[in-house]
Image 1: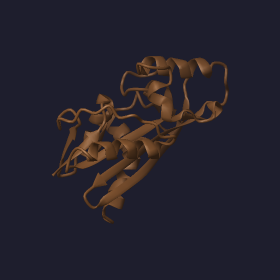
Image 2: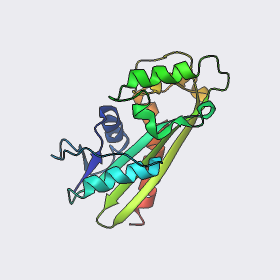
Image 3: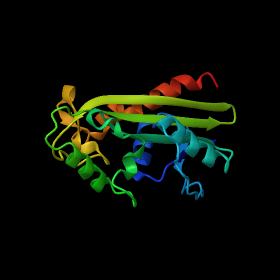
Image 4: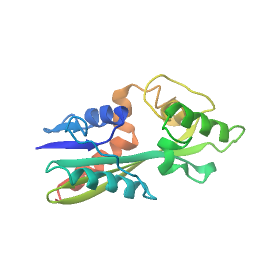
Length: 192
C-alpha cells in the first residue's frame, strides 16, 4: 500500500513527505503514480476542495489518497485570498504575483492579522476523513526569508520572531498548518 498525495505543488509534496516521514508507507505524487487529471477545485471551502481532489484521484486508483487544500486568510480582507490563494492574482497561478497582490491590498493597513489554513482529506477503502489545521500570525510589509513557498515570506509568527520563509524547514514542519492537520488526521485514522 502507498499514499498518493493529490497535488501538483512541489512545495506541498516536499513538506508532506517530511511531515509524514515517520510513517511506514510510501508517499508519491500523482505524477509518480501515473495519474494525470485536471481537477476543477470549484468548492467554496477548503474542506470541499480537499475532498474534491481526494475523491477524483481515488476514482483512479485502489491506493490511499491524501489531498490538501490550503491558503491564507487575511482578516482585513474578509478572509481573502482564502480558497483562491493559489490563483489570487489570476491564471496562470503565480506565487510571486499572488503575494504582491496581498501586499498591495494591505499597504498602509495596521491590522495585519492573518491565518494559514490547511485541510487534509483522506480517502481509503475503509472511509473518508478530513482534518483542519490553522496557524495564526500577521503579515509583514515586505518579503523576509528565502525558504518556503507561496505566502511564507510575508507570514510572520510573533512568538518565533520570524516568517515561515525564515524558519528552518524542520521547525516549520512542526508548527505549520499542514503539520497540525496531518497530526489531527493521524489521530482520526484509528477510527477507520
